[in-house]
Image (cartoon, rainbow, N blue to C red; front, side, top):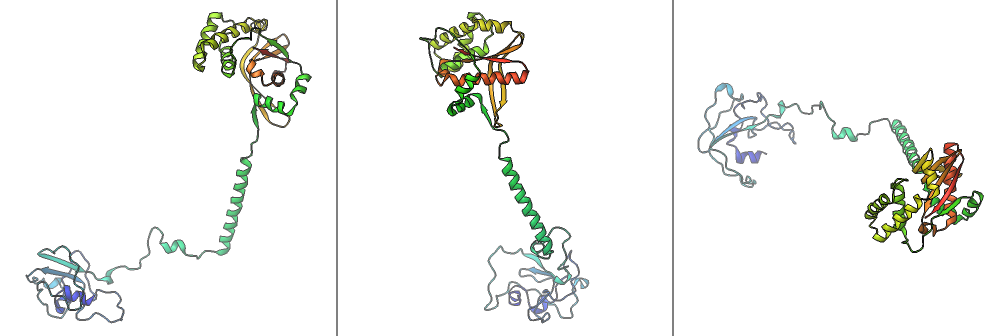
Length: 343
């Protein structure tokens, strides 16, 4: 730094006699470097800690005697800009200093270097390995046990505790297994059919429309109310006028059947009632009863099926209705019988 200081600061005596820096502690050292590579102390041409005043072409005013850092050497006036020392790097271009300015060269000896931080962590505190290695291994083993136990818990939680399927899906599965005929024969189901199916619309949309009207309309509804209900449900399903008219006729025929008269006179009546039962393999079957009503000492369970649904096989739906009846009987403690109403 000495060659650079020689290019910036005035002659050597002035560099050794700075002013006392305002707002700074008293600099008692004459060296501005804490440790020098060669171990030598400050030299005569080394800048001393303190304040240096600069004034373009003017000279530095004489400071009060009590503001100087003690030094026996004479004080040299501060000249204007100096010519750089040959061989030294010129200062980097920058803003021109003001006409009068000062620079404080600090005394590193008054700084509290190496003080311990009162908060936070230093980076070397985070990476230092000064802990008990046996304790680290114990904690690592605890972590591995926790990780394995957590993985086992997640694996067990992924296994379903109950397998659930719909009654329709269950009926299809028993049909594929070939046991539906055996079940239907073991538990007979009454079959009722509404005449006049020839020539009317068919298909899934028409079947859905008929079921929607039967589930919505009152059991004692007159024909005009049935027609209005069919028109409303038909708009929801985008059904044709022919389908709406045919659905109203089918529902009116169903409501006029003797079985529905018994349902209207029953003490207990359930419509669109959810029902569940457990199979022997532990699986749960969920379904919805179209109609169930109590008569004397037994319950009649009715399931409406259209020709489109029965095309998949009548025997599977007979077995389904019997399962409905068995579930109702177990839930109520009353005997139950099934009726398959073909509409």
